[in-house]
Length: 203
Ligand code: MG
Image (cartoon, rainbow, N blue to C red; front, side):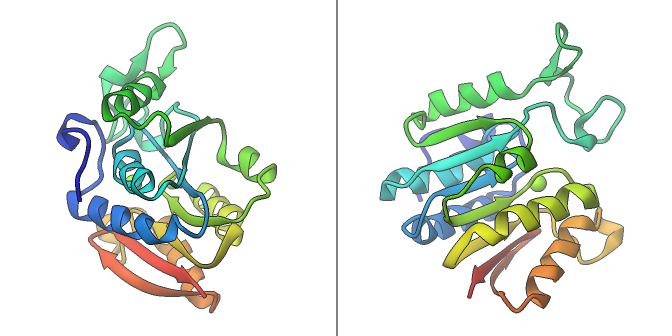
C-alpha cells in the first residue's frame, strides 16, 4: 500500500491497521461500483479509500455535513478547538478535508458531498460497490445510515462499519448494534475484523 501523504499529518481517529483494511477492501469492492463513506471529518479514511480508488479508476463519494458529530462538540471527549469556526459558531472540518485531498492529490478521485447523510441517501439511486459507515454514533444516526445505505450495495459489495465495540465498557453501542443487525439479516457475511472495524460482504 502506498499512501500519497503523511497519514499522521491528518487529524482523525482511524487506526493504521483499520486504514489498511479499508484500503485493501476498496481495491476489490471499488471495481463493482462507487465507494461511499459516511463521516469524512478531516479526510484520514478518505486517503486510505481514495488511494485505492485512484489505483483502480473508481470514485469515492465522501459524505459529511462537516459540523462534527456529537462527541466532537465543545465539552465532549473528542472536541478539537482548532476545528472551530468563529464566524459560524460551529465546527467546520470542510477546509481541513479539502486541504487533505489537495495535499494527497486526490481531488479528481474523491468527491466531497456536503450535507446530511439521510437527505443524500433519499436522492441516491445508483448501486454501490462499498459503503463505509463512520458517521454519527447515536442509535438514530447509525440505524439510518445502515438502513439507507447498506441496501444500495450490489451483490458482492462490501459494508464496512467503524467503532464496533462488543464490550459496552469500551464505547457506545449503536455501531455494534447495526453490525449485529447486518449479520442477523442473512444478507451479509463477515470477511474481516480489524480492531473496531468490521468488514462484511453483501451476499
Ligand atoms: Mg469512527
